[in-house]
Length: 254
Image (cartoon, rainbow, N blue to C red):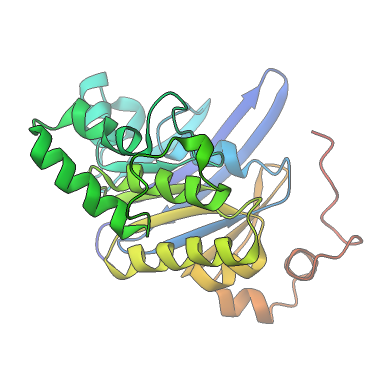
């Protein structure tokens, strides 16, 4: 599939004495949607923050599409790489003091030299892509949870990223709103964008994934296609897919 967008090897990270990532290795191919599964405390959100450059790992290596090591980049190089990365946070992370329009426009104002007319057109197009036409004048607190997630996605798309990271994009949403988010993720994949989606929602995972990995207590314990996960006899995969309380996946104390 050509050069890998991300290749991570033996990642470790701890918060104080608590090791959260224990030797995780994975890769992301061009145009692929990789779903990272795991229960609470499995390390999946920490992994996402490490992979997108928001958090430095304690050990291990991350190489990006041109083969460069993220850790070895200087700040200017890292900033340039991050401009090609979009992140959709679990709580959408919209600024409550800014309208939806201004939230989406923020990265464009920071990194693009656009006049107000150009900005208005581009933000309007971004909001239209996520089915939020006419919502630009609203404040974040006026939006439903699903609409906030979509506004967060519009902002993540603003710089036309090569990779988008999603942290629990359908968490806390009703089935209809979650389905809309899933559809938007699939549409981005069809446009050729590489994506990493962290979730514990199996229905969503099966709808959007090209490939899945399962984390448990900081270890990557399984990897495969959705079909392989559905048909697996691995008791760890079966327990997570079926939602069983009993099995090898003990609940984390963290």
